[in-house]
Amino acid sequence: MTENAAQQPASNPELPTQYTPAEVEGKLYERWVERGYFEADEHSEKPPYSIVIPPPNVTGSLHLGHAFEHTLIDALVRRKRMQGFEALYQPGMDHAGIATQNVVERELGKEGKSRHDLGREAFVERVWQWKNESGGQISGQMRRLGEGVAWSRERFTMDEGLSKAVQTVFKRMYDDGLIYRAERIINWCPRCLTAISDIEVEYQEDDGELVSMLYGEGDETIVVATTRAETMLGDTAVAVHPDDERYKHLVGRQIKLPLTDRTIPVVADHHVDPEFGTGAVKVTPAHDPNDFEIGKRHDLPFLTVLDERAVITVPGPFQGLDRLEARSAIVAALRADGRIVAEKRPYVHSVGHCSRCKTTIEPRLSLQWWVKVEPLAKAAGDAVREGKVKIHPQEMEKRYFDWVDNLHDWTISRQLWWGHRIPVWYGPNGEVVCVGPDDEARRARAGRRTAMSWTPGSPRACGRSPRSAGPNRPTASRSSTRTPSWSPATTSSSSGSPG
Image 1 (cartoon, rainbow, N blue to C red):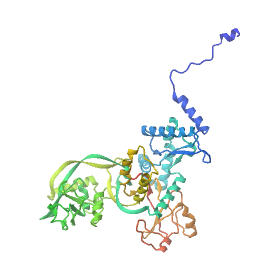
Image 2 (image 1 turned 135 degrees about the vertical axis):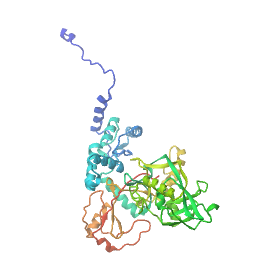
Image 3 (image 1 turned 180 degrees about the vertical axis):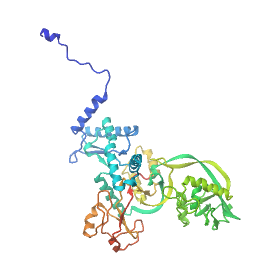
């Protein structure tokens, strides 16, 4: 060693005093991605193993629940990859119809505009713009977590291919009688102006006021109690229990409905609890799910008295009032008429709220598209009963069957502009035509032409004999397909687990 070499300090930089993940992990992860370590080859002869990420909403960001779930999935897939499987961790995001539309509408509101000022096509274009600019937060979080996903396969639920899949499955289920159109009670949000699913409703105990009102005249009077006095304008009956001796003399009779010029019947129904309140309940079939069922059993009229914004539509002094304003005004009018037999008293009850905007849900009679759940639920239950699917741990089977054996038909309609537009056209005489994305050739061969162009995710008409949707579809005239006034469905469809 020379003297000069001996005098040179050794090249031995000190290690940092603490580990800084951002300086190491980001570069390391990107190197893994570039080298394709997480990709999967569909032509591989290795045994396949794949897990699809439950797609997070594009509007949000990952929370601790996501982090826990994604970590478990990542560990399972990495282990299988090391064991020699062709392993795929499939990434993707959900378009989150209601939430995304709300976000963009709020942005428009800051500009003093609404989606109606833009029109449907321009609004949807604006949502795509927002998605491209602001929808990448989740991907960034997943990269920072080091998740071993196949990024080249990333999907978005509004991609062209997935839109085609939705349309194809909709058409197939429609043809199989598993999707139908019917008028029933739905969860309606007066703020979002759309139907929402059961799992999008958050229930909480709210402080309400119970009001007791006198119906009828003279010897034919009956007292009912309610927290929603505004719906009395849509009452079409009063129900009592068949074995309740107090009211047997009134069953079958007509009594005067206060503040209106109508009379309504008193009906006997086993749904009524004779021990609760006065043992008599007002029946508003168009604005309450339990009353809807009573209305069907007794063939009652269904009167809608609130519009889509929960404003009174009945001609008279309350027309145009919001539901809460109408509630106070109707109670005041009943009091002035001597119809309040007990002052308002506190009453805590469970009230549903829209999970997106927290607005109180309005049960509302509406014509919507539904999935016939019973055969699907039976197949899911039978798969476990026959051992084709195993629930782990086994003691959870009871909870599974409590859920799957008590499902009801599920509304898939959403009155939104952002989402999968259902492949349905409506004719001028009430006809309904459902077409799939593979029906284009058939439409062209039939020589039918419409003024609207077909784009992925939008409905179109074709040369099929139109028919009404639902279990009992009346026959329609083939000649009606020649009319130029067919219009596309304005609703979108939404997935979700029935509950």
